[in-house]
Length: 303
Image 1 (cartoon, rainbow, N blue to C red):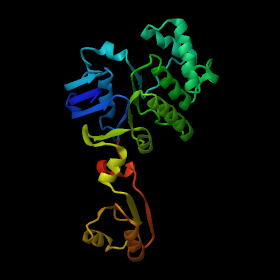
Image 2: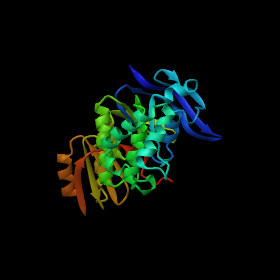
Image 3: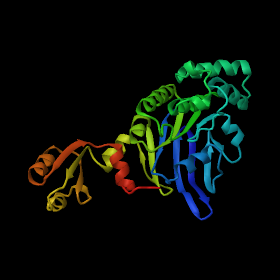
Image 4: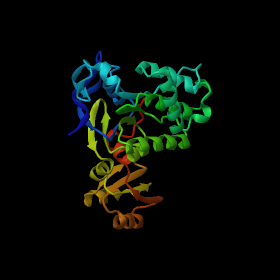
């Protein structure tokens, strides 16, 4: 396998707190690989080790076949990073933020300006070339940070929750640009807690919680393996519904006021449940990655 990233028994601890607990995975060249998980799962800690911001506590981690702890400078020259935080210079214009950042990669000023304008067009920022970063909307800021991450023509783009806090229009614009980059052969690693984002962009992904990997695979395979094809949702079900489901050996979750049923083909079961056990509402829909995520990580709120 031509791997861009290889992690073996990777661990990250902050004192007694273990943020990443013995995880192993690999990212292939040219694919979009996602790391999903609830808040505090260890997603950001994992990618910070990958781009050399935070040293691993234990385990082996290579990027482009290079040990990140010994070859951080060489690795950083070949990657682009889009962090969660807005760390643009607020007093500089859109163009100036890009040109100044290009100096970190020893890109000549004349070339930097041309490359910056090319990326501004790609990210639909050219009409705001002279606007100060502080005057941009959240969606424009994310697109500018992404443009900056592409200045050095990276072989690997790392994105930490790239669309968090964006409105639907801005989110879809970012997705379209990422799809173009992936189609062009760029390797992409992203963390997200948007299931639609992961399903749309990721060739493969892993779901982690409490620092450990729960599952790994292609989005559609994970849905079929852990949920099935259909999901039935029954509101205020009759008391004997759960006994009926156990009898049929059907996977389900009961929350008292609501029962969620996971099946491969739900049409016949849906009709029977609707007729016999549905007191308020009963719906059938296609299973999604969000169903897998909630089933594996739970539904309680995370801080």
